Amino acid sequence: MSKAFTKEPSGDADDEDGEGAGLPPLPPGTKNYITPAGYQRLRAELLQLIDDERPKMVETVSWAAKNGDRSENGDYLYGKKRLREIDRRIRFLTKRLDIAEVADPSVHHGSDQVFFGATVTYANSRGDERTITIKGIDESDALAGEVSWIAPIARALIKSREGDEVRLQTPGGVEVLEVIAVVYPAPGPAA
Image (cartoon, rainbow, N blue to C red):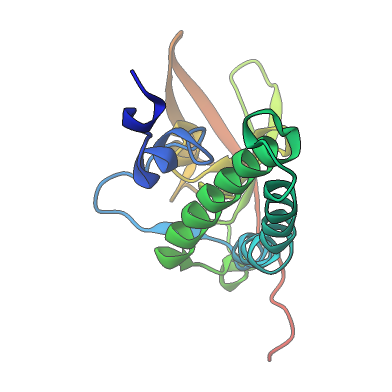
């Protein structure tokens, strides 16, 4: 069959399989909560892609297209592939920022109750302590001790207070966790 008659994936299919594939979907009827710093990071990435990286790649592809046979032109082939990746990421970031609900955790500064944005220290029944920060889906980083607010551990901890015991359903059974400390960032200077 001729390559001209093969169906390429649509842009929406790319979004599902591409840059956002590692992120869990939002639960139905919920908002895409994100901290102000997380929102700014995603927005900066979007602007950098639109204003810097995409124009450079368009220029490279345009230059490579003028160099003859495109089927064996590595610069052209790589450039077109990278351009699709950039466009996919731009679409993903635009969609996520459009539905983002910025929630400033500093409004809870001084509170001992767990809400979005809290840094929580808890201990399991063996006495092992762990500290996590509850963040948005698009900004959490497990390696940095940040978990999404829809993660089971975050859902178990939300609305608890220092000294409370919460139950977390794990594959090995129910685990009882004690909330040791709850900390929020201090409010920044008024703008």
